[in-house]
Image 1 (cartoon, rainbow, N blue to C red):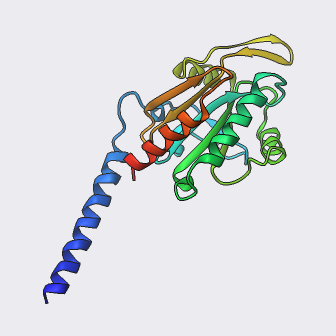
Image 2: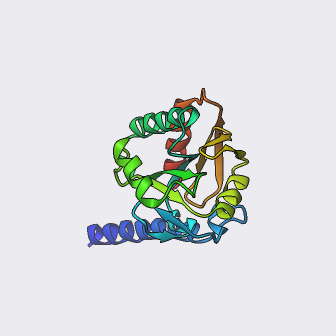
Length: 194
């Protein structure tokens, strides 16, 4: 009888903890990116709002697929970050690449880019939208970009980490982004929300 009582108490405590986690994720803070109502398309041409990404730690970078200078470095950094994340935690992380060139980067182009760069596992999300939505999101990240020719952009190099509630946790800037610092932040954030 005592064993049954202990088992029931353990189950109730476990369910209580899970309910508190679900409640915590259900209530969005005022500075959450999930309040943005813009429409996006992923690499599978599925329409979504950013709130569809809620519940996972996000590692976000803005790039464009035809870039030949900084973007390949950023893509390489994102791939290294993905490789260094503990495999037990990878299903709690979403690595998000947002195009700053919506005129060129269609969902089909993003899908081909993901496949060519071996970034087509479930933890990878590529997003494209229209110019206004892209600029709004860049502003939220304090990321600056400008079209300098028909096929080229000047842009900031920023990798941002968001918690599962859509709050900005950290940003690393420049081409010498500290990958280990990003991975450490991701690991801490995943643990905090597990």
